[in-house]
Image (cartoon, rainbow, N blue to C red; front, side, top):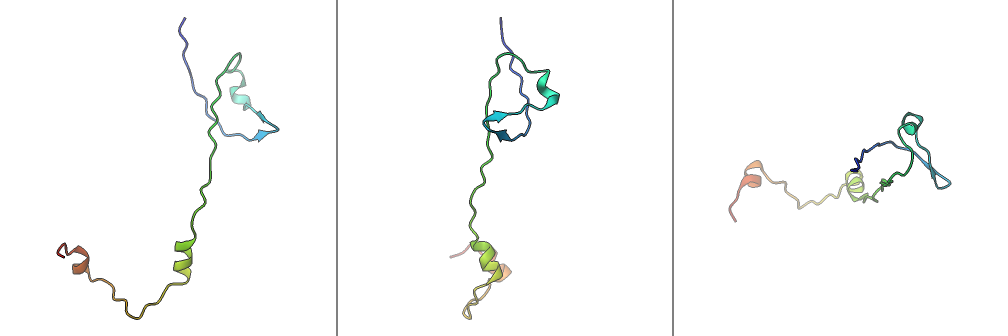
Length: 75
């Protein structure tokens, strides 16, 4: 007897260690199931770019590149 695996995806909250199956899927699920939990992890981002944009560093010796200088491949 071969087994066929199907995937059902939904978002829910875990409450007291229990995962609530949405009503739309309950009649499709019975018996033994395999559960894989994928948790979204929010990465801590640096605020350095935001700070520099809000408080730019002014350097009187800075000269922006000209268009020709940007594409110049020599030395």
